[in-house]
Length: 308
Image (cartoon, rainbow, N blue to C red; front, top):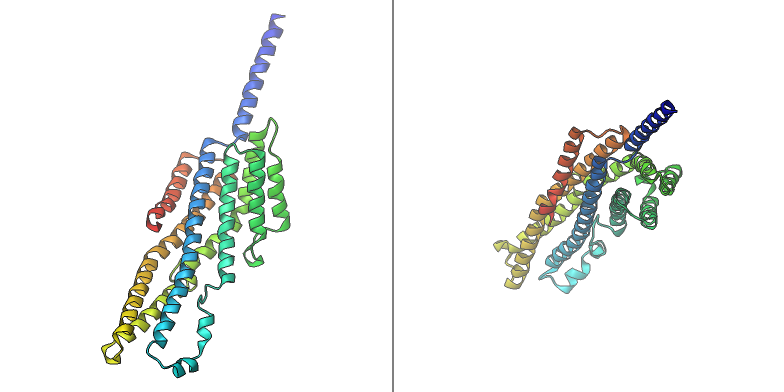
């Protein structure tokens, strides 16, 4: 009888440690949770900064083009102005067409919604909050153009189904599986959007940032022509030209400093996303991995000071 008691006790202890070991290995670790939170918070900050800067670039481009066109007609007769090709007045935003900006803002919104979904998954969010975060992410992905969408219908459904697994006594273990599936499925999508935005903010990327600086340089040249003593312009025109010169110079200097930093930070965010992917793909997250990830995220967060 006594032997049976000890056998039963040993069996219970063995089962306890077996279950504990299973729970420990199946649940999300603290380091993985910190990785999710760090990436999520950083991605939200960067998405807000980049969207604000994108809108600011478009607004400044319009103002610079208006200023340049005003300078070009300054001092000219009504006949000369009437004879001028005014098609430029209909294209004040240049490459910052509303449709182009819409594509970029949708890309930023997708990164932001993905970050918020990860933050919800890493926290004690309610099922309602998780569903809202999921719906927001899925909607933002579906809203992307086919050129910038990596998700097919099957993958989108998998993400939605992964969230439905939450609930019940095994929540923590289902949570890890869900997070892992979402991160593995989303990696290529986030990479594609980061590449798109990084090139747009790179002054040497031949896209939006390049065009923005060129608009500033065009205004600068226009202002310099009006300020040329040999042109014999009136003091009123020269005053307008001087104001335009300072406006263009200010924008060019600011963007040559700020835009490359935004581009770098987006690429750093892409790297952080890769490290997050590796952490969950391998299911191991060592101290070395944590240091690497923290350093990557910190380098992104450092840009917040520059971008303010």
